[in-house]
Image (cartoon, rainbow, N blue to C red; front, side, top):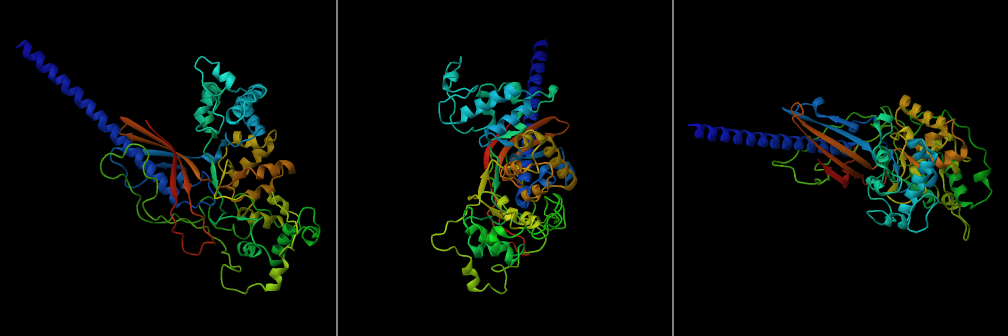
Length: 494
């Protein structure tokens, strides 16, 4: 009997352990489903978000299934979406920006110089060591030798391999109030080369006269467009009417929360396009069975409508019916044979020929760079003060003014609105405006699935790039039905 009792007790203990193990596995699998659902929900919100302006005042920034109907029966997900363009790009930042950034983070000028030199030596292709940097000789002399990359970083975690970047610097120290570098720096930031309407920007140096009229005629007068064309065609140092005209008086400058008269007009909160959230089919969950290992297929499964900004719609030549400009007037703007053409490197060069409010209104429509996206630009609407300080070295007043305007008025709709800042000198303003944006294409999604009272949790973290096909003309009254696609740069489950 004693032997039978012992056998029964052992069998009961084994069954209990297996039951607990199975329950833990089921709970964790359920938590993974919740986290995966959170990722899909975040992609849905980003799919229907208007790409013209991005900020943390938009619906995609923080998602909690407990606030939605119907709730899950025994768990929930939390998703935080972070704009990677609100961080300093370690692969594109220059020496001065890096030095100012590391000085702000560490509070040590000497250490900031060492980190800057070491990072630049790590990513450059030569073997010439900077003053306090390190090249291959240093890394090959370590107890566990390795070679420097001599190229762009793949992830921010690669900083741990670089001279001077100790764990307390990379991961931060909460006791000292030092944030992790992962929260302030990135290698993934990218901004789409589109305007506030989602239309592809026009390169002011290569666009034809008729293209400029089509894109700008709802904001600029015919005389202002002609002055812009003359200014471009005169060549460096050229005189004439384009540069000799007195600067027209500026009307009341727009605030970051408002919109200048014209294309940026709108009646709703910035960052959401001023429109109610569009209705549409429910977001797709995970199909039956366990979600597949690794990143899912990121292309949206349904044609979610892209939001459209309200306000006056373009009605100039080439966009709607109306009188066309006479041919002699068009021919007047063409440069003569052999004339040297001016290369505009910054839109600030247009200040002498355009009123400030109109320059602000067309700022997002023009560019001096080709390509569908621009790497390394910093989003004014999401960058924390430590990142802004890298662009505005030794000008804490300007950082505080940008943050204050952002908090009081909402997201900046245009980089041109920086022209209203009173705390930035002219030379610093030009460098700042060439390095910032108001929109992003790169997002970090961190989803946590929770079962019961934290019986089980599961985390999925991903970095995705949103690719929105730019419209070739201003949107009509009907919402655009071109869904974005998502490219996965990073995926981790734990």
